Image 1: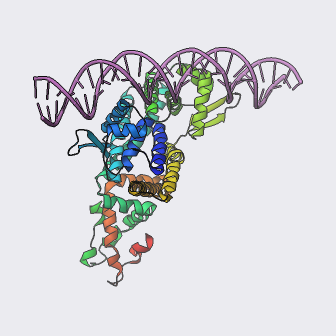
Image 2: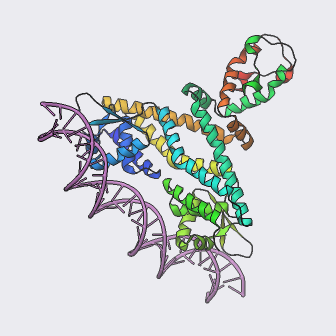
Image 3: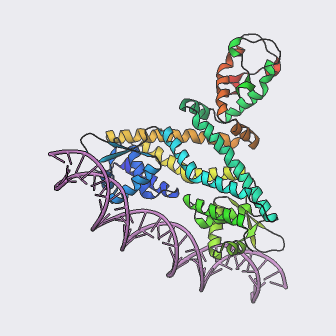
Length: 199
Length: 199
DNA sequence: CTGAACTTTCAGAAATTACTGAAATCAATG
DNA sequence: CATTGATTTCAGTAATTTCTGAAAGTTCAG
């Protein structure tokens, strides 16, 4: 089998990009190939198309599996294992976020917590700890937010993304709304909302 | 000069983390050291404390400068250049996001756009392009959102983060509110808000 | 200008990481 | 349960990246 120019260009670019991240060029290319492939591919076909050794592909697929980024399936009448990426791009982002968190953020948070607990022995330590505390707090905040957002269903998420910065208008709205309920007369029931209770 | 155990542990961890990212262990350690340091440090002091060659530190600082992550300043009565990180952790996140976008996302978007424009020559190409289009759309959406959020001032941002997933409640609120204005009687002026106009 | 203090460059050494082919392991089929 | 086809492991090699020391470059005080 041979790659079309479009697929080849994408695969090559993705390989380069991969190496700016933690993953190797090989792994990046394998993923890119699977991502645009019409059907799941067996390892030997990947090796042939990308000109990697069969064992290299095996390693790469193993890594991608450890990231939960590829699915393994058996096709009827073929003993080989076939691989494909997740179909839903949103799910891919989700998985990526989860894994990166598990591998990079969580260990860092744990180190930060430990170091913040230590008893400082001098002014330098006290300053260092206060910096670490800032970093810890920031990460925790971002993480909690990411957790919450993870839970949204895609439609809500997209709505939110499309709203973008204008969400601030909503925040202001929220800050002003409670006034409305304060004994200023009953409104029609379909708009009867207690914002503070909601939030 | 010698590192305290707290600083040393942080520097070592950050170095390891750095190498999971695109930056080298050295660069990670230099950054970590500057991050917790009470005062700006000159290159030779960094080299001494971290046990790197002076030239290695020079390279590392150059890289950090290219990321806009360190500031260079001159202290009175000292000819050497002194380096420090940005003081505000939010600013650090912002800078990091900007740089990563410039180096990784933008080039990818450009490749995707080009490939989507190509005329497909077969079914495989058509499928590949539709996948690339999905990816392109997703990235654009996330990017636009990030752009918008960048513009918020820190207070608004923090408020938003703290709100987390409950922001959805606000979305629902928005979807229900417009009903209120539709000739159901005048409300008090301080709560007179046209949501659709705001958003 | 000159020289001292500091910084950067760069070619090669050292260390790390990626890749391969051969051998071992595993699994399905008859 | 043996054969065949598929996959993984692993030890060694290749490629890449990181790091160093020596040399060149820069800047500034005198």
